[in-house]
Image (tube, rainbow, N blue to C red; front, side, top):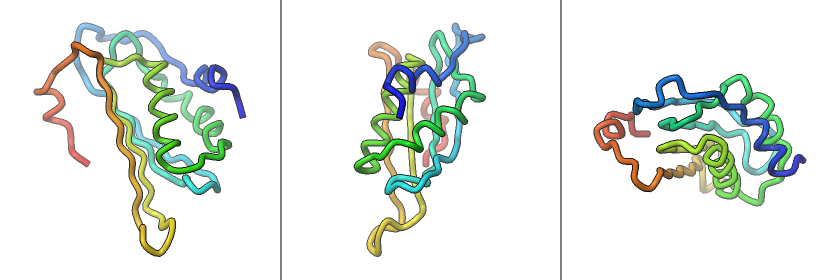
Length: 133
C-alpha cells in the first residue's frame, strides 16, 4: 500500500480549458477487489476550477485503492472523496459509491454519497439540471 501522497500522485491533472465557465464533468468506474467494500461503482461529478482530472490515470489509482483493507464502506467513500477533492480543488464535487451485491441477508444495496464546494461558489441553475440518482 502506498503512502497517502504517493497514492494521490496517481491522480493526474491538467489545466482546465474553460476556467471561466461552470460545467460538470462526470466520470464512472468500477472498483473491484475482494474486500468487504468492493466491488462497487464509483461516480465522480465535479465543476472544475483550475484543474481537470485525466481519466487515463484512474486505472492505476483504482488498482491501488483495491489493495487497501477498509474497515467499512463509508471509510472508503471518505478517503476517495478526500483524495479527489485534494488533487482537483474543484468548485463543486460529488462522489458516490454504490454496490448492488448483498453484504448480508438484510442489505442488498449499499451506497454513500458525499458533496463539497468552495465556500463562495454557487450555481444553483447548473446543479438543478443534474440527474438525481
